[in-house]
Length: 151
Image (cartoon, rainbow, N blue to C red; front, side, top):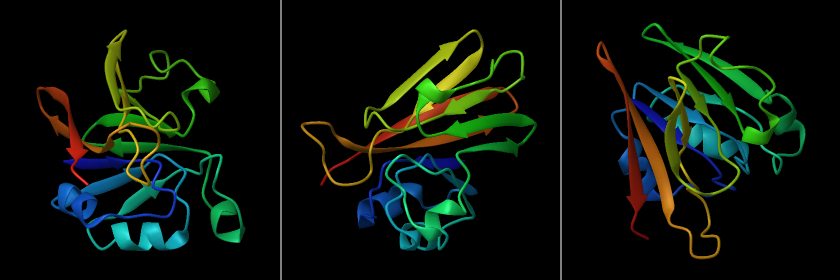
């Protein structure tokens, strides 16, 4: 299972840590907020991250704007803002596009590609729920699981 998180804005809740426990890998889709967020998540599993529009400073400059993850013969494309997608995921043979930014959890298959936004795990914004996602990858396919955090 891959843990998917975004828009922490410097906050890692204990409930988020619990929801991601057991992950083989954690993907952070940007707006991390502070380098300590990644260090905290790394206590669970290795972390792959992209920089969001609110990630600034020397720690953030070292984080790429996009990333490609290969996991169990699937390729996942990670970026913060879906509007900045500058490639064709189908032609590029990506199984999943992971993004954040909107703070709204979202999972939809388009032309055979899963588009997945885990929602926001950081400070509550408006009335949107706090959420993360788990991505289960098996021989038979990909299954996203959205986890709403009660907090």
